[in-house]
Image (cartoon, helix red, strand yellow):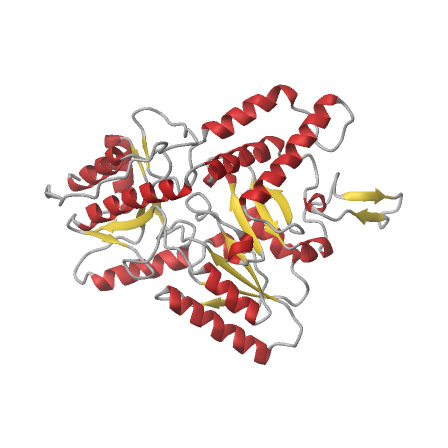
Length: 420
């Protein structure tokens, strides 16, 4: 590929604290793969280091160590609840990650529940749902998403048995394109039809506030490892009734209030403990809560403005490179978080990613991003927009986050413009 002069790129606003969480990194390595796993925040690492000398069992002991750890764990739950704007009677259940959280809710669905999703979801929000789920086509716009859902729920109301529950499950922001979905509007449509709604906030929460009360959603799932707390914790937060009525997700110690001599003599507890059997991931919960507290204290508007400027710089730079085609579901001006997927005509995406890593120390993602139906559709649409271009069957993805700099964006653009 020949070297191409790029137009002037957007300048960045300069907030007083561009990285209030103190994201850790390796000097010389450019990490543009935040959407897969974000680096660790200093706030998370410090919280874990402070608690480690006190580490002991949670909910199981009367000693000082155990009581301190139990307090830390339950405080972490409340901090996460506050971060998500949870209602007073919502449950906040610690899980391993978003996939685990969605599977937990899938196991807790009342009998006969119909789940409605879109074909644009991550596999974590496609695969756990029961047979008979409704999968809507990928919409061309946010408005189309709202219309598709309204039509589907109207049809279900006519065809399904009265009184059977319906759950709408939708992403907050696409892990392929970064485009934000109209969550509040979808929630209004769902509730108008008597359905509940789950938001997969794995990609949205690191970039924008997620408030279940303000959005009026019923459940939200997220991962700590995408939220600068890579210690193996995730969260399912939402309405208690389905969760308290369901069999325990992980039967074991801590999930019971009584176990008798016979196998059937078991009384399960209610509340989050019902689904947190076994010794919980104390350090993961504390790390995640520390990041939530740091975000709550930060200037989210300034962080958003800085990310959007980085994103504009990246997208305009990619658009200026010959043979580079961005993938998108909605229009080019649709709101989005700091994720961009693209292809380089005539170049294998895996080979490009390997070249960037070995020659330029730049980490990006290649593949179909655990969203195969969506990614393949977008690749087909990209080929249709660029007739004659030989596009590869997989894509590249660059994703930014706290600590990403203009130098790193420019380094990626320069490396792509000088591919051998």
